[in-house]
Image (cartoon, rainbow, N blue to C red):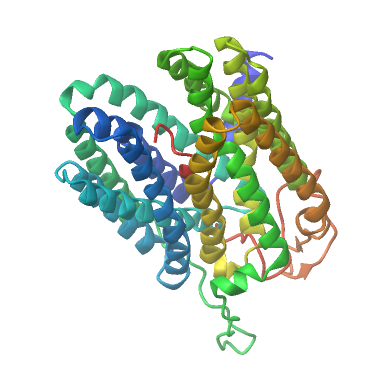
Length: 452
């Protein structure tokens, strides 16, 4: 492939999206560039404050527990209050939490602040995802999610390098920088990002159409979406396991912590270097095909960890495999969530989906640690392989009709009429939906797994 074709491919990947999306993209990059708290929290608690490794693990788990509550809270606020107010408020709450960590020292105070930070950080995500679905045309929505995820990982890579280099300034200084970056992110949203919550629809007489009330219970009664959430939980458990099980497995093989650092760095390098290429290759493919493929890649990548022996190169190769699965799964799952959500309930749907990530962030560390410390690392990787395969089968068997066969909409640009048409999402551009549902075309931690 020539340089010209590569340049043309990159241009096609980033072109055609509304200006508001790029302000949101920039806010994500700025936010993650200063994300030092989760990256260095365990070291701060153990090295700086002298707490036990057990306490450090508990505090990180509390961050995930906060996300379990924060995700549905953020979803409800996104639909009722608005996208932009929710983002600004929760970013400022996360900034205040980061600043507070620079000053509190008692165990109870630290645990409380981290719990509240987990609530705020996860509560902002439904509003971000709903905003993308609001402003980006339906056929570009998966590409937009992929680009935003790329910004998140690019910012994380910068934070990891910058934080490591600036550690001589002290952990508290890094936490203050985190607070400043998150505040700047809130300012970008407040000053540059328009509110995108859809206005109430009207009938032919101009009277407001009363939308059906959507509660969290209503969302969970949506059978296809409930299945999507459950399968995503399975994938999240597999995705989260390496962040806990991999360093323990490598230590069991006699490898040093620095070896683990090299291996896990492959994750960020692959995403930053190849996310745009992966998005180009997978664009306009069947959502079910992509979700099934990503689940199998998670299964193969984590399962192969049991076969890596004591080779750093082999461990790095397993990370490459499940990282490709991550790059495919995250934007596709977000787009599928937007696809199934009614326009006026996008926040709640994204909030419920976010709970699956948060639950996995709380449960997987405990489960992975118990399996490694009990039956052994090989059992952990056998379990992740089985769960990943189960998820792949589930996507194919249970969601093909909801995500592929029934995706139908065709707009007549001249008359404005809406004609249902059977469109195969594997070959037709984008993800379209039935009228009144799904994606709209509105004039538009170390690395924490939960952050995905």
